[in-house]
Image 1 (cartoon, rainbow, N blue to C red):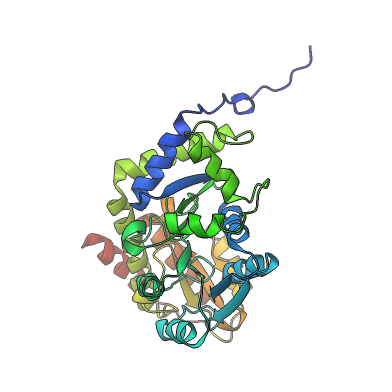
Image 2 (spheres, one colour; image 1 turned 90 degrees about the vertical axis):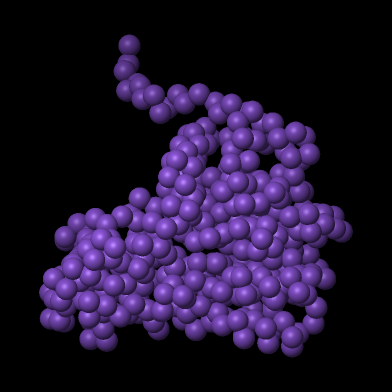
Length: 364
């Protein structure tokens, strides 16, 4: 008989239907939200597009904040559904300034929806979320927040902040699978989504997903991928065991240690700490050097550095300290490899001082 090379991963048991609701509640606790939690059987960009598709229609007016390609996509999805979209964009690789948002809200017609990314993995920046949400709340605007690259690395109290739709993915700070995501949806957001006939019969329809909640949160529509949900359970278990405050503190320490190391190395971080992500640190590449050459030099040392996305004029490299990488060993390896790459390119870098600065940060 032919040997099929049986692998237990090929025959994973079905995920128990009654545990989907438990997963949703655990995510709600993580987000400090009593809003409805929807589980999406796809990577978080699908959940983001589902939010846009479910909101967009003729007559809807949106203010869309662009600080990376993700914000640009969200505006396109809204326009495709007939919404009127007013884009405001920050400089390449930079966070939006609160004054720019305030002027846009004061200058234009009534806005129904405001959308933004909280932390940008593309450039390592952090947008001023609480201040922007306060402006939106004062005007009765429904807010959509891409929190994929901030949940677990930054404080995200959904109800206290007043976020109407928060989209998260577990694959970054939470250290979970990439093939499943979640949204929290407020009552105000549902009123806007369900008004005037929401899109239906689509994998991108939040109204269709709401039937899971209305029906008692049993089995999800379609055929769920059990591996993704078992992996999500495991990731949430790790986060709960460590404690979300400790997870956030671990990322904050990794970020501050990385920046201390870069400063000692002689390489300034891209933005000040108050405007920087705790998951990724971006550093400007010296004018005479090529990002690709530095990335290749670090790779030869077994360290992955990456170029920023959608920020070409800024010429940034990213040092990743996300999830399981938010630890001393990875922070040290990232900065030392970057220093070694600079040296190989003929640029000065004080690797010893950088190592001491990182060690000091972790010893406090």
